[in-house]
Amino acid sequence: SQQGEEDPQALSIQEGENATMNCSYKTSINNLQWYRQNSGRGLVHLILIRSNEREKHSGRLRVTLDTSKKSSSLLITASRAADTASYFCATDETSGSRLTFGEGTQLTVNP
Amino acid sequence: GAVVSQHPSWVICKSGTSVKIECRSLDFQATTMFWYRQFPKQSLMLMATSNEGSKATYEQGVEKDKFLINHASLTLSTLTVTSAHPEDSSFYICSARDNSPLHFGNGTRLTVT
Image (cartoon, rainbow over all chains, first blue to last red; front, side, top):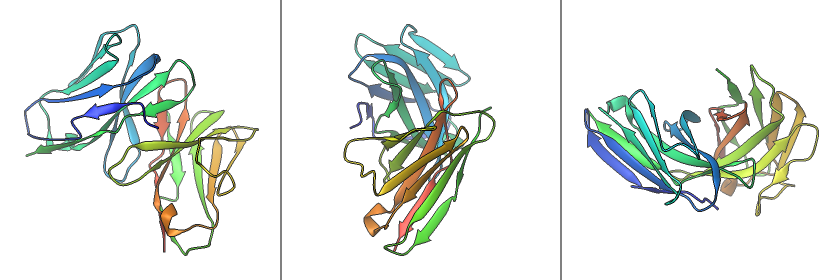
């Protein structure tokens, strides 16, 4: 079963606006990762944040991690139509070597 | 960066036949590869962990005799869907770990008629 829950399930915004997606998890983790999936394609790694980090930036992406609340957020600033995709969080649990994926957020950026 | 190649991209087969999907790590060695299944508009469900030189580890509820996994070398894992049925129609994605994070293939769309 998936341990991650993401909200919202779907999000539609206008180009230029910011998009925020949230992820919650249940177990102890080594790190949390965010992936992007274009329709019918594999996943592309976006950013990894370790359990001892609270915030990380990469270009227009900003990720936060709150291990006390077992939650993370992904912010995409100044969104573009090309950002339209599904975004998944994935937790690398301390108890195993595999990633567990959240349910995903479908982001649509309207031009 | 690390590249994972998955083949074929899509396949249509008749019910009762078997389909083999290949997953290759092109520029790194992967002792472990992962096979996921994804239904439309849903998340990835881990099916099994493929270990080079040993038996795969299957997740609960995944039939190992139906989904045969072979990890014969450090760069190749194969998933064979045996005696496929329409309910096996799905998107299958492999991934390999080169330290962290995971690198994913582009997936295989399987349609069983």
